[in-house]
Length: 276
Image 1 (cartoon, helix red, strand yellow):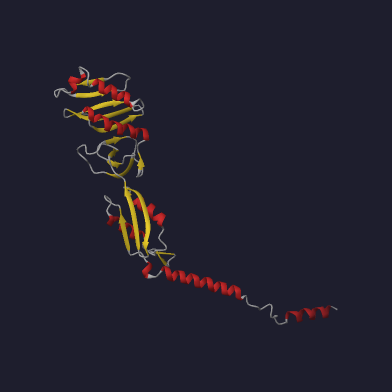
Image 2 (cartoon, rainbow, N blue to C red):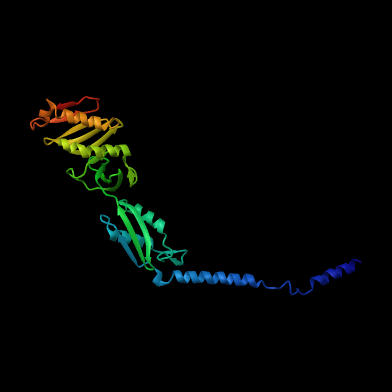
């Protein structure tokens, strides 16, 4: 009985494979070839020369040099993805990432939009921050700041008072917000109302939450207005208006031989001043 079982097992191993065991999975093969053909087709289309970015149009740049932006963008499109796909392909342009890279490289730009104009042209539409103040880290290092208190780009040294200078806070990565809404309102209000008193502010120094010194020119010399920015501005301005129309401050203020050092409005209903 042992021998019969043994021979039967041997015979089974010698049997030829059945037709079912060698059947080819044609569906799988067709699917693999279809995917491969699709990938080859996609690569072919992406590499077509007529579908590569050859032109870059910059719209809206006034201070920023469009040539510098074009050169920067071209540098971002150098090379290939996966060692095969050209980065210049109009289909592979990473619009949102490229927008962020442009803004980081050119802090003066407030908004950046990258659009595909056609199959070979990118349109870069930008808006720039408008500098109306100078935010200064010290007496000689200043940056442009817009009407909303956003510091965005280095400024050249200005010897005169072309822009009001703001001294507050410390430097961080550009662009950054240097002023709160309330502080921005204080500056805007003083710049609007003080000229009616022949006071043209040149510098704003936020020394603390309750101390704001405003520098201006009086008789060829620098004088200072002292305010508490947390108090009612209208009340402080009314006290200043009244004081400059009341003797003896009125006469001294308009006397070219008198040199004003400061007018202090930090005390309620009081105007404290000092002349040399």
